[in-house]
Length: 212
Image 1 (cartoon, one colour):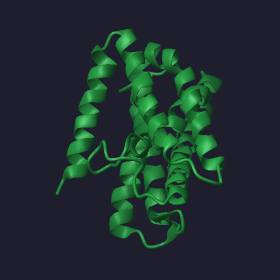
Image 2 (cartoon, rainbow, N blue to C red):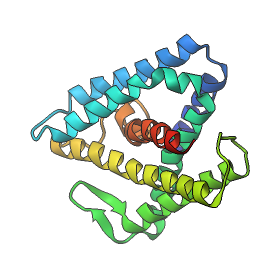
Image 3 (cartoon, rainbow, N blue to C red):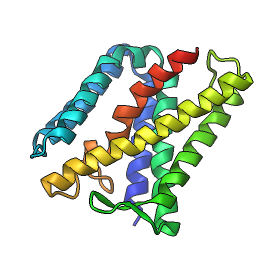
């Protein structure tokens, strides 16, 4: 009954152990292993038109390129992951209970406007407070300008999470499959779980560098 939640909890525990305890080599090896599994799943989903698969392939390569930077900034890496994680959870639960207006009826019929807006607001506002209250510290002085800019970055990244989810959903719709795999009970495959992270995490690091 709670398969999705149990799997998510196990993923979170594993993620925290790797971020806080894994040596650098293990950390980077884990990233390459997960992305490798994503490449493997993607290979069997590639169909015409190819643009969604090519787009996702490029983002996977970019994510790998940042592996060393992620390892050197592990807390920030965790923070960036939470952007899309909170977005996904907020959109899923709010959309499931209150959603009515479909936004991608052909590609992702369960996605609703209410869920999308809730996911973006919950993710951006929660993580802004986390940074502002210095629960996680940034090299950033929260002036009126930098504070607004930082909230804009969080909002932009939350929107990118929606884009990542859409691209992966489009790939599956073209391939006529429900999930990219079955490795993660309640979630599907690796691609189903990391679709938004692949885009959001590098984008957050890049955009944060603009104001710090």
